[in-house]
Image (cartoon, rainbow, N blue to C red; front, side):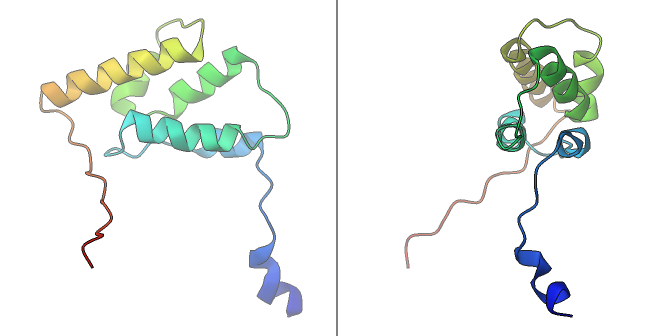
Length: 109
């Protein structure tokens, strides 16, 4: 009983499984997703080769971005991120994608 009540306070150790399971939300910007993704990768107790980072990232993006990224070759994570941003911009311009707006804090009170 004691352990059940306080197990929520035990920190979750980040693993590669977390990177395999993370997904970009359909209305989440690529910049917000990369920030969330990097937050997880930075907590790993080991470093991943760039090629594996690229593979995991391209698989984790929303379908409208992932399908194009996965058929291309990237040498750096930055190349993949740049292409993802271009694909996102194109989808927004064509009216195929609408991103959620970030809620801004209300300091007027």
